Length: 341
Ligand code: PMV
Image (cartoon, rainbow, N blue to C red; front, top):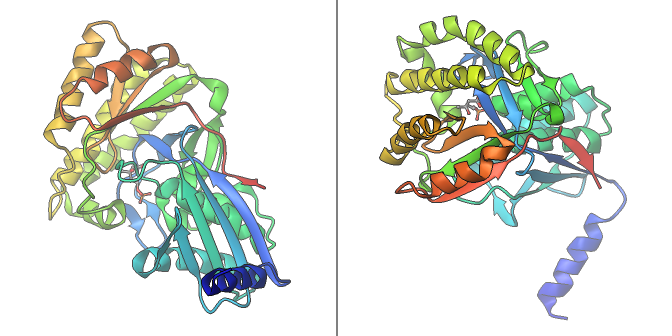
């Protein structure tokens, strides 16, 4: 055994010692059908408007949290790579909320693994902070209700609040106590598919945490927020009725209005690339040819094509033909964030 191996083994033994409290949780990312953009309170991540989403069951993050008195400070490993700086600070801020609730000040080791392809441009913070919150609360010995876990996850990343409950979820505005997400339908309510089309692998210049505070600088944000309630009600009603022909135009309009706000902010955020625009136009063409499919787009260039399960393969095949497309992957609706062994 080399001295390094011996050292590693000692570390392993030390970390298995009494005084550790460990829990592991799994969460899925979600795609918003009615978008969240801008906050009433940036620190508390209280959203400017309610939103509605679908968990993506084929993508997941599994996070183990171990509170250990012997650690000098929090440690963060994502897919085997150690992170410090802003990524660790954001995780520590979430853990501090859990520590405060549990009345402890123990540092933690966080080991997170995700099957979202690295560099795919698919935001994984929703799954990351949902899994972190569920695992950390359990490891700290807290027995929290789903709404309390959704609230905790929200403080890490707004959209993470929607990855805590199962299936199709609605996140309401309100106070720090009341702004949480709940499920409006289970995953098996409707066999929708999200065909995720990666249009660029380039790292985003401005992520959503940096983008939300810019929303209020757009003169279109007030109009977007004023119209959200009606779009959300139409989306909820047509989702519950499994009526894609009526839901599709609502989600497209909502995504485009959000991007209009982004593009008219100061400074402006232009997330679309020529491939994004080609996919938008192609979606209209595919519909004209008889494939019922509609797009939505988050804070990036990638296009999420929403269709019913029987059309998913055809949509995937069509999307792969568009110039500039990097990767295509499809997901079914997913379950809640949950503890795993
Ligand atoms: O949760 P955040 O801060 O990553 O913001 C998510 C923002 C959008 O993905 C653009 C919209 C949404 O509702 O998920």
